[in-house]
Figure 1 (cartoon, rainbow, N blue to C red):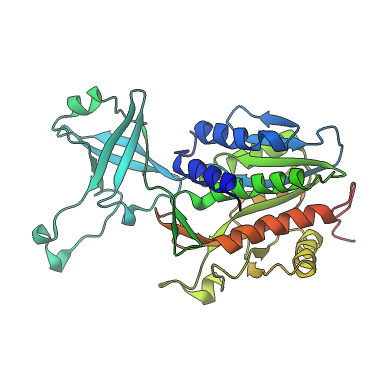
Figure 2 (cartoon, one colour):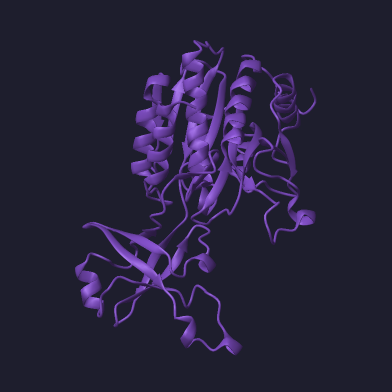
Length: 356
């Protein structure tokens, strides 16, 4: 991973792109991807697609999603305190004492999720943070003062926590879920260009919006692209951290390689191609089973357009939906290499029929 790639990753992660407001991050992503693609597609809600060989009738998607979890301003008290609702799967338990950025037409308004001092709490009846007792303080004493700052119901709220590298090879940031996916698919396009690879099909490098609220961006863009094949990347849990039940969640860990999923939405023959490619190129990988759904954009692609051969490559991640999400650089490189080499194995017009 060169300096240019690392600079892009840091810039892309540090920008705020909450669900429904991904445009700034998409512009950063498209600017980086521009030298490596022939054209772009965008849709009315902000999904961005870089296209290689747009004239080809056989279409392969590689996909990640661009949005991050956030909060909405829901209610402002007469005393100037702000109560929130979720925009995606935001975790109320980590909110207390966190700094926040409230996005307004006047720019960023800073605030904090306040929490009562330990001295003032009844230890026999101690409350944990809940959606109805966490609130944001922006330093105002009245509702009118809050509104003068430009804050109103519906303003979106993000955390300001920024990217850093821990112990040489662990990437830490909020929103690794799943802007790291957008980074990895962009790096695949870069690698294809640098190695002068001429693909025998159209490649659609797709950065979808609104995954965190129900795979909505993927639902829309798959109808536009109408792909033959979709290889989706997202994150999954490192289940070796405390308080996770491996009997329920399976056994996957950072540093042990990309995770290939088994699920009804995952087309069997495409999955086996991923595995065969990993083995052929000595790419370490892990396996994960999903009972009914993957919970990722794989589901949206797989069940669209009469059925699209789809597969999922996940990046193991610690502390999902917190501000200290953590992945291993070796796994990031592994996902890039696995997607890249799998693309080299796919032939124009190749069938991944259930009956092959």
